[in-house]
Length: 225
Image 1 (cartoon, rainbow, N blue to C red):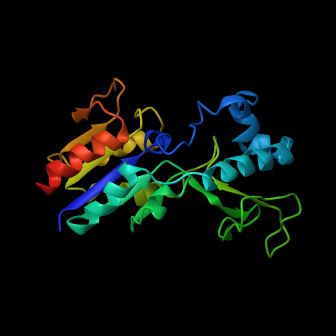
Image 2: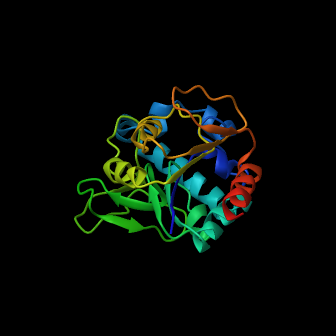
């Protein structure tokens, strides 16, 4: 089966009603990035950080995958599809895609603050002060914060290098290190980019200027036919 690698960003989840980091209304605008998405913010005001991600989880429970998520899952009937996502939601999983790598962590998981290998599924949407791992440390959101290393990056590079078709959906290619993955795509591998906005890049790609659901439908029909 032909190998397709898909890199997804916030643009694919917007149609499901998930706000992006830059568009989170009052909840996000009240806080600087460093206050709710950095190790410094965690040390300074743990309860604020916990509440911020609790609210995001609560929102996630009220959303569903959209047509773009489902079509990517349906591509697995004909292709070997691997998804690398910058998103921390679980919409690809709920749409039944089977091979998903989360670059920036997962909203519905938590991890130990003293042992990064202790990662747990969170029951419900709320993580509270005093919720501890088995080693006695406070659990934190399983999210890669600004200033932290991206532990899954090497694995993402290896997956990218296997692509025979590479598809980018809903990301401006300004978010690094994820945007750097394109430099690892094999020389003759076609690259498709689905995003309604103008994209500046030195890498050649076919730009489909549509929102995710429409663009993925076009790609799906092209590949299937």
